[in-house]
Image (cartoon, rainbow, N blue to C red; front, side, top):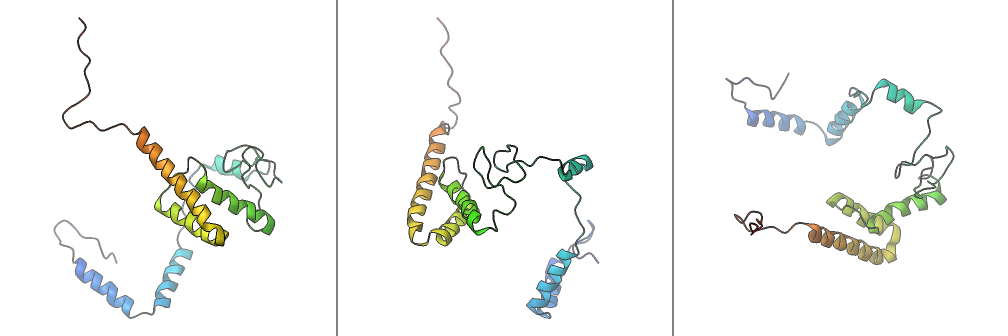
Amino acid sequence: MQLLSWTSTETPDLHGTMMKWIQKWQAQSPGAIIGKWFRSLCHAADKPDPWSKETDEGIRDPAALPVCHHCFAPQEPAAWFCPECGAATGPYNNVMPYLNVFSVGEVVRSGVKPGTRFNLLRTAGYILVGFLEYHVFSPLYFFRLYRNHRSRKESAERDAPEASPPGSGPAVPPPPQ
């Protein structure tokens, strides 16, 4: 049964369809609704691989050389950190307590180094990580984060071409004399 399909001669009854859905949802508990949604995710059809079969075989080949996720430099299979950029590349860095500190530090440092691109989700993540990791020292981190964000915005405004008044067009050089 397709609820929202119609031909060009019919008019859709979206209000009636929405009312049916609302009545159906009101008859069920929130747990049942979430359970059905979760089961539909678990039993969803697998999407095809985004690459060819040769690429998939090359990735799964035991002789394939791993690379750094940050700079794409070749890595030794047992290396914990990239020798080129210092990024945490070990297979268990995020679950080992001592090495996890370096992984979290890499994320936190990325917010205050030049060249960071900010958006709403990323900024919220930096603020959350700052509260969770730095506790008392989080105001210092937030100051550095704000300073980096402000300098990035100022450099973008400085590098942007100035807008000319409408109708003025490009400047034409005077004719040679």
